[in-house]
Length: 219
Image (cartoon, rainbow, N blue to C red):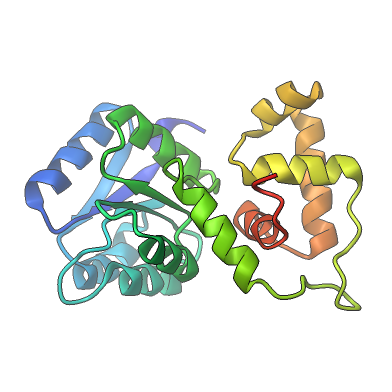
C-alpha cells in the first residue's frame, strides 16, 4: 500500500495548526481529503470525505473530541482515529481510547513521528506517545473482566502465539516481529490470524485490547 492511498481528515480548532498539519502531511505524500474546525463539523463532513484516518484534537469547543470520535466511528466504523492533543492527562487518553481511538499523540511529537503514526494508524496499529501506553495498559488491567471464551476462561494460545501477541500489542510490525523472533513476516501473520480466530476477534485493534486486558503488553 502506498502513502498516496492513505487519506486523512485533520480536525483542530486552531486554523494555523490545522492548516500546518495538513500541509506537512500532504508534502510527505499523504492525501488530506478534508479538514474541520470543530467536532460537529467533523461528524458532518467525515461521511462524504471517507478518510482512512481522522487526525484530531480533543479540545474542540462546545462538543468534545470524544463525542466526535464516537460520532465519526458510528458512521464510518472502518475509519481509524488518531488523537493529536496538547493534553497527556490519563483521563483524556483513556476516554479517547474507550471512544474508539486507535492511538494518541501529544502535540510535542515531531513531524516525522506524526507521519509514522498516521501510517501505522492507517494499518490498524495502536500508536501512543511514549509513556501514555503504560497508563492505558494499567487502567485496562484494572477495569478488565474475564476474557471471552466458551466457559469464561481464556482460549489457550501457544507460547509462540502469546509471544507474537505481546509484540503486536507493543506496536511492532510483522516485519519487526519476524526479525526479533527470527521467522518470516508471513509466519508472524499466520500466528496473528490463528490468534484472532481462537479469540473470536476481528482485527488488530481488538487483539491489542485483549492483550492490554491480559496485561501482556507491558511484560
